[in-house]
Length: 474
Image 1 (spheres, helix red, strand yellow):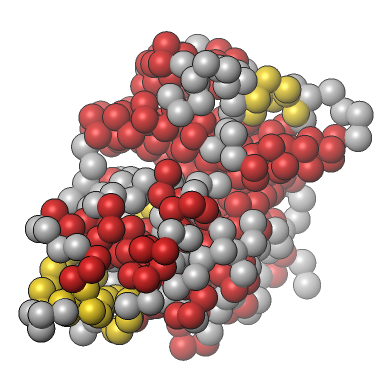
Image 2 (cartoon, rainbow, N blue to C red):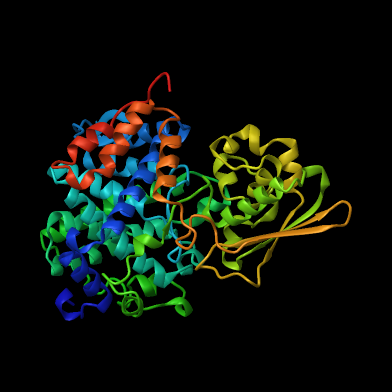
């Protein structure tokens, strides 16, 4: 059967029409500013990751793929250029590697870490303007968020990582915007992305590093899908609603959904989904943030570890398989990545230290006897008051040795669109992250260039600033 014999699904057509018609002038100034700050946050996360073991080892592995090719594209925090596909893949791993990057709440996924590497690499390759790069970035976020918002936690339930799966579609549309594809070709790019979308949650079982690979893989897959579509390579025109499309092949039958419903409720240009993207206050899985804030609040009230007999964490049922189960393993994280997905550790660190930062993910912190003792006292149960996935709220019920019970609830997680970090707070987070390994002057120059992106005639100027090695003195 030829592709023409299969009707184009409404989802793919709506996405393509929006991307093809999007102009930066159509985007409100405040929404543009927020998009620039989301980019800034992602770059700061990549800079903070630069000296992590995974950054060095992945750089060696991905850098070895070129087989003698001359690199032309920059990598954040590295002076050695790589071929486009490899630079994009590594930039995705760097921006996502610390799990400190933004999250679209309703979609339960990270979008900037696939879309930003895709548009940065391709825009630099083509000598595109900053305005064109920003427009493509917004296009990718808006379309990816709508796909993920419909499937919600359905991909997680089937063992797929939506950041990798949906990121391929979002990156294909963003790349297609930069390439100037027409609406029919943008439908084709989505059809090709269907064969490339991937990402398994098996890393949750053992704290392995494969999650870090997903967004960059999606980004370079999206670029390839768009390049193939530009050559009018025949592709499935029903990538979402077809018999073997995303909604049928990747989701349990009871969880199938139609994106056109979401498009009607939250139509393109009427609602800007990127404003629903939350910036993380903690370098942990977003599911544990509310519980961490509750623990920090109890610490501020004077609750001390020796007073604690039992901690009951009331969590959204949909998050518990990720951060609470199996409870024995979550109480004994073996790596920083284990710790990032451990609700018991998030609570223990908050109660013990009144904080949860990058330094609290060092082995000395999550293996500290006092932290382990508190983790042993953490028990998880489903929260009947949860509004997940709209909010990632949580409550802690702490039973003290004297019999008192103290409860603290964070109904809306900090960073959520209803409780957002301001642009000024995002800039402060960026500077904290960027100056871990880089000088303050360089970090500030990058910040200023990123926030002035719409005025930049050629994105390669930004790429040159990004591709610098850390300062020995930083």
